[in-house]
Image (cartoon, rainbow, N blue to C red; front, side, top):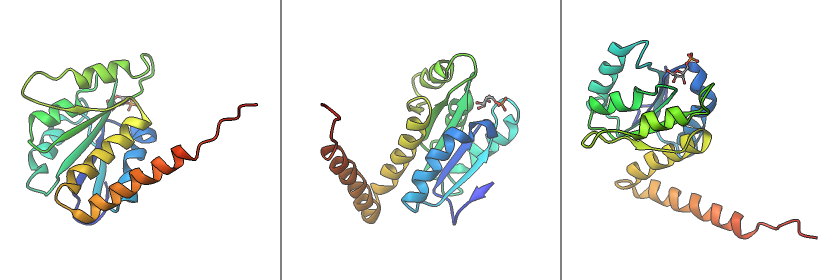
Length: 166
Ligand code: RP5
């Protein structure tokens, strides 16, 4: 398990093969200096560990869980079933259905057990982390300022874009 000091955000994924996508969530958390932990927790291959992770998440101090999975992507939903810590689901692109299976598996939660579901792939992983930062920023003014600055940088970059029109 990769871990920084007293984690506030948990990043979990169904397989190490999800890392190519999920590393983009970790990169954002590092950029904002948010303490996190990252590890493989598989819904299908290690269900007992998944339940223990979810059941202990809140008492361990986690304020958000970013869960990425591909294919029959049960991880985010089953974790959400066992904790009230907000779960941010990232659909990982799959081998045969390009991640559309992952997306539908994660997004179609029954009423009462929410999973905030993000875009398939890298953008979803990064945006899930930005949402985790926003959750923490609600009670952390310094982090809120960092988030405002991040957005302002993007705005400036967009305004400076030049098209190669001849
Ligand atoms: C899911 O099955 C994982 O989240 C991964 O996206 C997918 C394939 O896993 P591997 O067979 O590559 O380990 O549980």
